[in-house]
Length: 327
Ligand code: F6R
Image (cartoon, rainbow, N blue to C red; front, side, top):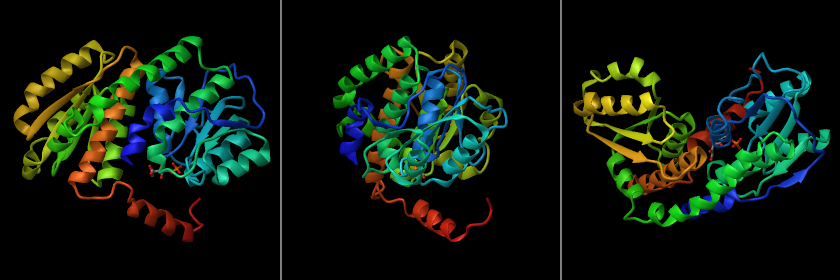
């Protein structure tokens, strides 16, 4: 897995194979449906492109989706039932649909119906194919003419610069290893303005390190979670806060994070801070995500667990297969 984490930038540069008929999309709204490691792409695009990208998690297509809107369906395996369910509804409602997977039912449906389909390499865990899925979605948005020239330039430049951070992120005397050490045998509380960053950290820590983790998004955190530190009493000895910070955080969020550090200092075992590097918003988001991927890997080793093992997810999917009802 470490080699695939190190290979993030190569994945971000990957040109997915394209099948089916391309088209022009001149509308504004884009729904991206996906779960887990695949759905994380929707969160990233939504944070990067500010709002017009609507992540869809779960079985339902939002009621306001209309005939002619664009829907992108991302499932690494191609067999995730929630994503297939949203695709079915989108086709029936007349959305323009693009599918992205390494194979599975999503590929079959796309090919049968002649939908635009982008194929990513197989043989990875979905979460370690994150870069392939991001580059495929970016390519799809480019093909249909949705992605502006500025955004395309920002993507190329961010990905181009990212590789220079590999040495400082990937070694065992790096800050990534130090942060993993702080989280070892603790409950990580991950705080960020950007959902895509916080949730990728949490998901990677959950799946790779089999470690519980919690996220909270600023400034919403300040209106509720900040009060929740009195009970249970053992929590204080277990919780470690990580602030994930970027230059693109709102000015008041930057201030709020400083004040929260002062208020919560005595309420947790410790507080760490990771500042993003890079120039553009996308580069900073990708830097923090990549940083977190390494942290999750080191934490897996510290927890003496196999980062590949996802027994509970597999067992859940197997058990669900037996039941065809509930749709
Ligand atoms: C497993 C993983 C999961 C999957 C999720 C959806 O590595 O990361 O979160 O991504 O169960 O499956 P796919 O990505 O195949 O649609």
